[in-house]
Amino acid sequence: MRRWIVLAAVLVFAACGKDKEIDAPAKLLPFAATLKVNRAWTANVGYKKAAGLRLGLGLALDGNRIYAAGHKGDLVALDATTGRQVWRVNTKLELAGGAGVGNGMVAIGSSRGDVLAVSLSNGAKLWSVRLNGEVLAPPAISDRVVVVRTVDGKLHGLAPDDGHELWSQEQQVPRLSLRGTSRPVLTGELALCGFDNGKVMAVNVLDGSVQWEATVSPPHGRTELERLIDIDSAVDVVGQDVYAVGFQGRIAMLALDNGQVWWSHEASSYRGLGYDDDALYMSTADGDVVSMRRRTGAELWRQNALAHRLLSKVAISNDALVTADFQGYVHWLDKSTGALIARERAGKFRISTPPVVSGNMVYVINDAGGITAFKVQPIPGAPRPKAPPAPATDKGAPATPPDTAPAPTNTAPAPTDAAPAPADQGSDAPKTQN
Image (tube, rainbow, N blue to C red; front, side):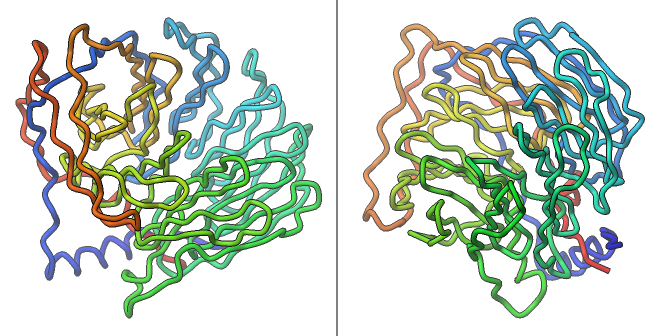
């Protein structure tokens, strides 16, 4: 059985710190707000300190219910409009990867490799199984299979009726990799997943056969730190196109049928991508938010006002983008320009999992299990942010960061507390294979 020893990775980073100073997070400055954001409700799913480790306990939305899991074992279903608790179960597990929703069930994973499925309607236990690896990402569920990724590099296909293993596939795990795993994605008869070796694999869900595998980010560099190339975020499937991004690697567009790489550019992100009809949106490992053309990967704009703030994945909310940071702030950016247009704080704890958007509602859960729902609406009469300058070329060259909008009557002030260096930066530290 493989074990992941984080202490060794922390010591590696400590050694690096003697040679290179850690970049300080950007201070939050005032800007012209064009969105009004109100807190609709709050809830809590419970918290158990997990030695500062990054977990995959994000929110899942299905219909008018929000599902959330806490590390100390609670799993809850909440009314998405009011925050009212519909049901709550105590699994008595140290939950680390949750919650996947589909086929009438909620499936979650634990730090010890447990996978538990409960009824979507009332939380009643359906089945549980034990896998030989920590589960740090939500399972993907269909009526034919429940797909689970474990930290030992394995992709498991489980039967939806009782959880017995139907098949498994494996990719080699480098000796040093980031703590975290890519969430599996189901499309048609394929399960797609990214791996710590910089590859994306497509597996047939019926028999577990590998349909294709593609290298998105080949390793480079002389040291193991330089060769970190994890794909820790879920791939995105849009029609017949697959988009993936790796840490210290590349962002690429692949063909769904055979994995052929249509284009790729250098990039570094462990959070993943958001997308709409025309563009991709990425929060980079350095804290920039970037917009790119979907068909070519050419950069449209780049916003660096949130640099080094350990941003979450970018979510799409009408004409805005939403991301959150290590101090619990939630930031809205104009989708066409990248200008900051709203900011609210959900609490003092870090938000590392993606915001969830439904209509004009945005939901976040922080790393202490606190859930906050925001209602968003435009400010009447507020001018739209200025259009960004045109990129120099259409080949991925960085564009100049956009100007912010002229100040309307509502202005978002800078927070009174200055941004210190992230206290939990070790939560994204690499893990080593022993």
